[in-house]
Length: 472
Ligand code: SAM
Image 1 (cartoon, rainbow, N blue to C red):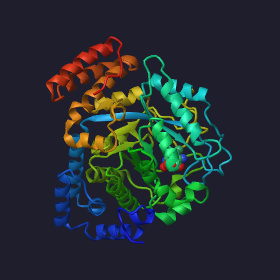
Image 2 (image 1 turned 180 degrees about the vertical axis):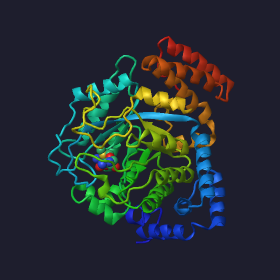
Image 3 (image 1 turned 45 degrees about the vertical axis):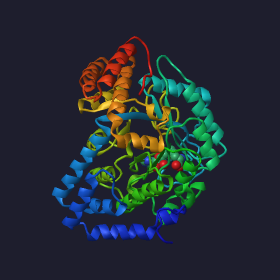
Image 4 (image 1 turned 120 degrees about the horizontal axis):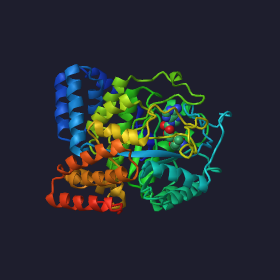
């Protein structure tokens, strides 16, 4: 198999030989300061880096250069994403699964977890609970099971989610994290009005992938790896990729992840909308120590910084798998979206107490959404509940051109402030509201166009009077 970024065959665009050569090249050049300086200079142009270049930076252990990499990641994040952090929550629909993934407690052989699938009434209850927290954006999650969770079930749930309007609440964007499927099914998801289609590769290492997925449809590495091409063929132009860090060595995964992004850009003219960086966590019958590729928090943050400068236009997501301390550090280095107030069990939001029986993994950040919002503002970030882009048709390359045009500050920034205002009025505690009002007042001044500032001020008053859902 020969490496070919434009090939539609998994083993050619994610090519084992090319990854091994990349990792070896990065090791060989990790002390080559001249080369590292050149790569950092190239990264400063904000046009991204190749997987080879980025891998050299990841391998570099010169403290001074690492600091330069971190500073640049922080600066690029500020330039493209400002100080906004978009919030979302996962919604688990069903833990029925026919796969045998060795790291996931939903694997078919696990007989001691109860299996649950939400009815439409239960979906509505979950959505109301999520709306009452203040969420506007969800990522729906389900195991793979053609009998219990067929595409019709997923579509019905999406429909239910969008239809619930409780008090001032509404879910305005549903992202979907379900198993690899057919072009026809992706088309149905597109027609149902989903935001991003998310699918984690888990590991790019084919042999290890096959061992980790011994049974079930997910065993097919090629079908899984080529899923994003089918999704794009089905008309979904916002796709989210990711690796489950800890399963294989991080250098291999890092190169694979960037090669995947390069492939999507080369073939479809638009790279991934988001990159997620989950790490394997303890779960029902899963001990993460069984996978001997765990990485330190320090290396985890370095990976995030290198992703940030390698693909400057791609959003980065971090979940509640991570502790508040790691989240704070990694947000600074490039993450643009985080989950908050999450429950990873089927039907978890409608329960008073956090249920553990059907949890997919242990959550390390147990704070409420209000606490997360409060914490973000104290750290200098604007919590954003914006869902405007895809509702305004700014997906795929149209979103990328917004990023590249520098108009984000006249568009995303005001949207963040207006959706924050809605949260403050409808859901926040007294302390959060006070902090938020101060933040909005201060941040209005950072909208470049006078006219936009004026419109925002008018709309903020209208939000106070009861209107909702303004957007640019
Ligand atoms: N079933 C779908 C699939 O196979 O792609 C997607 C949904 S699954 C509920 C979401 C993701 O959770 C998986 O892709 C995997 O990366 C992650 N996951 C599974 N087990 C995990 C664990 N023990 N710790 C952390 N993340 C885990």
